[in-house]
Structure formats: structure tokens, C-alpha cells
Length: 261
Ligand code: BEZ
Image (cartoon, rainbow, N blue to C red; front, side, top):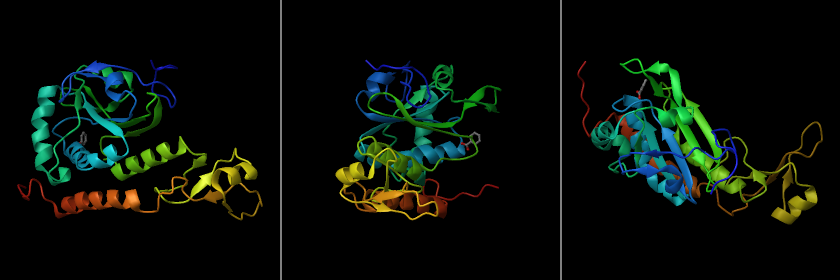
């Protein structure tokens, strides 16, 4: 049984819910039990940017699996709408021929959207009802929220960033390091400021101190403590994503480009 405050602030146990999805009924806490998980929402089915996002996630599901992360999408549409839209998503180049092998949760009454504070009051559907923003919740195996992102409907998300953030979260939960700006798996890490130099030596063997005008020794760099080498997971991931991006740049939609203007 997960403990602590229930909510969507960092460190809270994320709210539980039961809902229908494209993969049947989901009991959220049972679904994520003991695993890392990502819950991400999109404004609406049959919208262009959302189609690129869900297709992109389908194409990189192996990257989530490699990291032991379960993925689920959500919007305020019903399962029938999701099922029809999935056929469109799978027909675009964004999914790279991959099926939508993760559940899309139906939240037509906005119960979950309200629980998770995903509703964007600025963005309304044709019926004047608010839609969900592009939220991302990264949840740890303890069911606690580790990271959240909120994007408006007009800005599609960067999924390499989400994988990169998962790499950082999974590294820093086990090692006394923090990851610097633009860090990727295999890059040097910062020794936690709470560690003395002696503790840093005990933990990592060696580290480098960055010279700064204040002469304070707070920027201490050490090798990625997992022994990962730069570019291994990242490069594979980038290759997958480069394929997705190049398909997108070529402008293929289901292998064809149609100009109906
Ligand atoms: C889209 O997915 O393209 C989208 C959805 C809602 C508002 C704006 C864009």
C-alpha cells in the first residue's frame, strides 16, 4: 500500500483511479505496481500534434521498456474515439510501423484530468469544454511523483527529453550524484553537494573540481557511476528518433503526401 500525501506535487503518491482504456479496464495503482510509469495526456483525439506525439511514443516504446517504464496516454475522449483514432496514428510515419502498444485511457467526464490537474481552462473543444493540456507525470515504483511537465496544446513534447529525464531519475535514485544541464547517460555527473570530499572519494574513487573565481569547491564532476559510456543508450535512442524525425521531415503521412489546399 502506497503511503504519504496523495496528490500531484513532487513526492506525493499519485492519485489512484479506475478507467476504461484501449486495453480494457485499468486500475492505475495495480497497473503501475512496482514499476516506473509515465502517464501523459493530450488535448483531444483526431488533432494533428497529438497524432505526432502518440505515434512517436509508439515508435520508442522499446526505449521505455529498456528502462522498465510502463506508459499510458489519456484524454477526455471515450474508448470508441481512441480506437478509431489509433488507426490514423498507426498509418502515419511517426509511429514507424509500430502499433500503439500502450493503453490510451478514456476520461470523458474529466475525473482523472481534474484529479491530476491536467485541465487547461484556456483550451476548449468545439462544445466549449476544457481539454487536457500536454501533461507528463513520471512516477516511481513507490507510486510517488518524481517529475511533471505541463505543455500547452500548441507545443508538442520532446520525447528524447522525457527519456533523458527518466535516465537521470533512475540514476540519481541509486547514486549520490546530480545530472548537469543537457546531461545524457554516460556523461559526467555532479557529486551531490551534501557529500564531503572524503565521502565523494569513497563513493566514486575520484572526481574533478571545477575552478571557479570564488574558489569554492562545489562543482565536482565524476564519471557516470553506472559505468555507462556516452552515447550508448542515448545514441540508440537518438537513432530511433532520427528515423522518426526524418520521416516527419519528408512529410509522409501514411506513405503519401497529399496537398488539398
Ligand atoms: C493538436 O494536437 O494539434 C492541437 C490540439 C488542440 C489544440 C491545438 C492543437
